[in-house]
Image (cartoon, rainbow, N blue to C red; front, side, top):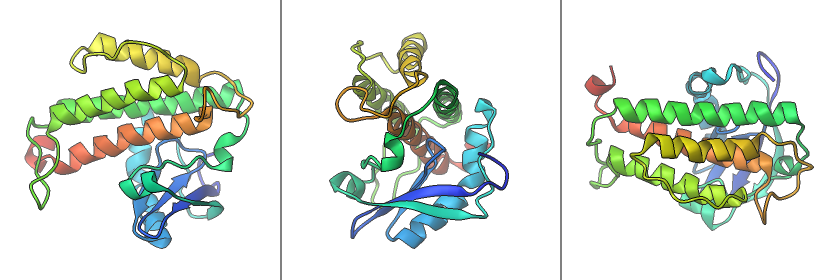
Length: 222
């Protein structure tokens, strides 16, 4: 799944927004107003994504050959800015080797988020209308979301203090333990499958990592 291998993707579309998602690469998912622009954005992020998951020891394809494997009807989550529809590709069985590869990518996505957040200024550049969380609030949001995601994995653990690194690490270890398990493709609890869980969790961490990076002053990022 590297080098010049074809990049299989699926599109999740509403009249307002489309997500283009790489089927075999958790976290590599970008959105835009149209399907064409979403695919363009996905490919534009290839090198940035590759750098973010390098710690997992895998290399995404060069994306010279893109194949749309599935087209999905999006929903309110799609419009809100979240890839929220589970594709048929995310309902397939997964063996132990592939589950471990995907879990390693999720772990690398978290590491990238932590590294970028630690290097960022406390105050981030505001949007054109003055909106946007500062760094501590983004970290709080990501850790809180991960705690919510842990319930989709069948875990019942206390929400960690986002400033307590050992507690956050413990939550992530518990989640990775679930993601590393082989699966027949069925739901882990009610809705999320193992493949979709890795995709969603990695996407959320990377999306906010890149948000922090893009909203930091360049002088603080050098």
